[in-house]
Length: 408
Ligand code: HEM
Image 1 (cartoon, rainbow, N blue to C red):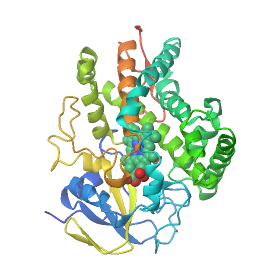
Image 2: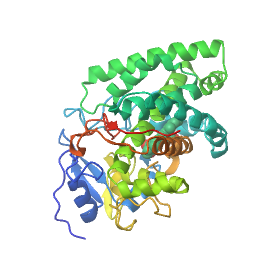
Image 3: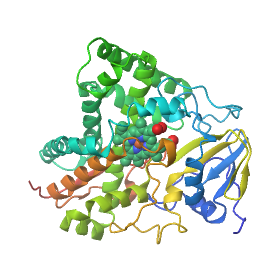
Image 4: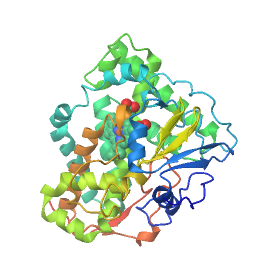
């Protein structure tokens, strides 16, 4: 192993190796030193983990705390003057993605039966229905249209709203505010204001559900008197945010990737049986939920390095999913690729709760889109597509597309 790659100062984010590949510096680091020191913008030292094996080891070790905030209070990345944390972040009620056991276990276990493969399969027809209706609407428009606005964002938003019992008509409130919340360099005041607007809205909603529960996930949770209103709000916030931003960006960036790989797209159109493997491959290849933070609660050995207690550790799932030590030809999109091991949904106790839902949405989404728009193409040159390098979930801001015919 060579150790000639310089220690990064700040997290490399520039997509200088193309819209789908990790930043070059991240790839170089992974190949040279998969667990590497890094210097944060405020000058404090932490670690950047990019190798597949090390990422899996780290994510399955609860000595690495998740109580490293996810941006509600601050992130080490976007507030240069923020001093290094000296202890885990305070917990935000209900936000179990940023909690450790036993709090994490208590809250997550309230939802595991809701998100099982079986329960999600039961929802499949409804998801297909929502997808097809959105595609009907898109087909009525005169191209070019923005695929993100007309398809990629509405489908998962409609689905998660229906599941949670959040009125879709209120989408301005949560779409605009969650977007603000995910901007990396957003002023802390703006972020707090967006968070306040979201939680204010959700507090009213869950209070109403507690008084008069309906037939939806938030109502089911609201019936449980062990949960405080603050906890209900935190859970609702997490599910709403995680439930639409991630899948929306997979649909948007995934369509862009398929359009840039016309042979693969043609194969997929010709044989929809390939769809489940294609979705897994797109998840690996794109890893839109890329960067996660952990916090070492002990001195821990990882990948031959000693991570000192109190260190901030940054993980790149995209780098891990492109690790040549784990995947053959990792930088090739191959919709026929077999075998598991991908970490696009994370790994360990925080592994994505909504992954079965996301899979069904993506299968229905790509299937419908390719079938209904057989001549779909980009309406602008590929290098003009606006990439979300400024956001905590990667993807495209807009995807202008056009077509000459539609199908049923
Ligand atoms: C957690 C990715 C869709 C809900 C996670 C994590 C990843 C991830 C990487 C792990 C975070 C960590 O370890 O800190 C994705 C991707 C998606 C997706 C790539 C779409 C393609 C969804 C959907 C939901 C959802 C549709 C809907 C409910 C959650 C929740 C957690 C989570 C609640 C926290 C789990 C925990 O802390 O125990 N997701 N996600 N995700 N995801 Fe997803």
